[in-house]
Image (tube, rainbow, N blue to C red; front, side):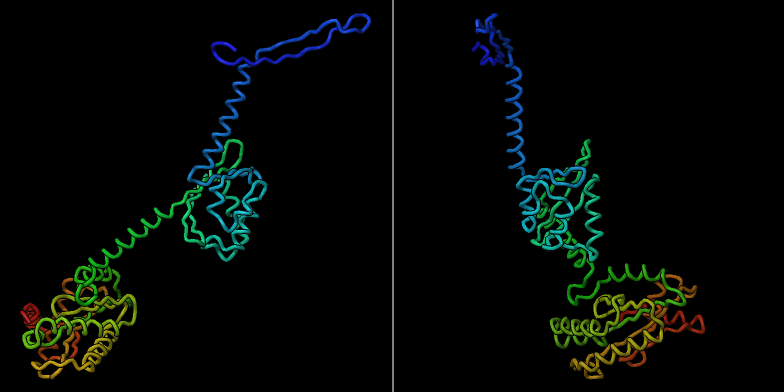
Length: 365
């Protein structure tokens, strides 16, 4: 023992014999192995510390040989895969583990073709790769694989469930906010903003083989309805009209929107004017059959006037605003014809007729 601590020696001794073979002494070599013993102690401590760290770390850790044999894994790695934990032991091949995953149904979204999937995942183990999987227990795991200099594959598995759930919640919130921004609060139909965006997009796609039609609908004498029954009943009337439109929808690409006040508008891609007229008549008839009482209407029930216009990418319309104006002009023709009917826009034969139609379309209903 010295002031600096323990000193370790390694001693080798052999007997020394005389001519008669009797032991007369010992000969030996003594070496100071303090440095070696210190290094060995540090190695043991480091190994124990590494084991402790790997045991307590929140990530799963697994090391595979260049042949795909599991050499080491910590407890956390096995905890992430309870259905196949008994397979994830040193000596197991990655293919055996993956076949166990298939048998247990432990991973979501495994393709129908199982054998190619096993081969693909086995090869991907030996690439620097990041992937995310979901287990049958609903847990999300990020698996990062890195190839070491000696050709081994190191897999680090992190539980990202909380992060994924937060991400999905944010996406859901963003989608709800998007819907709120594009939906009319009273009727549940698309609002004017959403309609304008859809119209701008579809307008550029219209062609003679893919005509775009607009159906503009106005509730007849709605101000009188509101004055007589009150605004709450007026709101309920608009909701019933909206439900009638929704029930009439035939395709997902048909946009139904509240244009403003008591006016609704339908955007019908890939729809010829004749089909749009048939569709409008179906709506008008269905609403009439609902028999919503309207004491201030000449018809005794709530009715609608409908204007229809079609665009085929031709130069006669040219602009979105003109397209809308044509539907509005047709709507006024329906009003002038006694309401409760649908009219199709046709080009006036005289400029004065066009000007008169435009003036009527700009007037207040």
